[in-house]
Image (cartoon, rainbow, N blue to C red):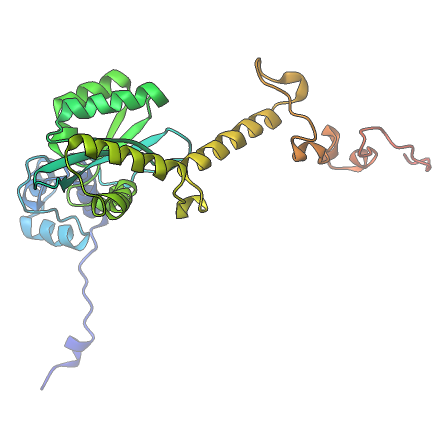
Length: 309
């Protein structure tokens, strides 16, 4: 096969067009369900001299393609990963599951968990669960624990409807929708649903909805109080929550000086707090120079025998 050497060593001289790529990513993040054709129209409106073929090439190279299957509910949210929860009652997750009664009739279960402690907060079962029933179940959770900052959900009609929008506005809770077809972005609830199906729904026999609610509540109590969780150092969720609350209270007490404790705070003794026995340096000990060396651990000034002191 005769091929010239120039063909073998040829390197593309096409520019990378970083500015166009950056703008295309920004538009794709703000217009989640827009394809390359609509993005081409927006770019031309902004003054970019591009054609659909170039936009499609950059669109595909950067992995911005979206699902072409028609969906009833579309998520119009930025394509970013939500941060993890760092404290108690900060972020919740909820989803739906389905199972059958003994006579073959289907029922649904609303699952609600707390992301930081992995506690199961609610298991609401019913033949039909709409947005109003979801809001009622969440209102019971808020009455017991207080309102969280956000709730991670999928794009189902029960979560994206007007009932949930009104509830979230009333309680000041932000609904964080995952991208369509990406259940891994709500991995906490997906993992919990797998445990619930393997340990309860696929094992027990349900005769009616009353029996379903009774068995689900018993399993929820066992999950929160007894079942060890690998992500919580083999502790139950409620045990982990109590330990975290005690640790937070201890940190708050030790962070304040003894004469500046907030009103209502109780000063811990040295026996209750081992950290109180540790040595606390004198305020002047961090100053560099010869003057800092003249202070002892007790905070009293040493007597220097030499005349240079």
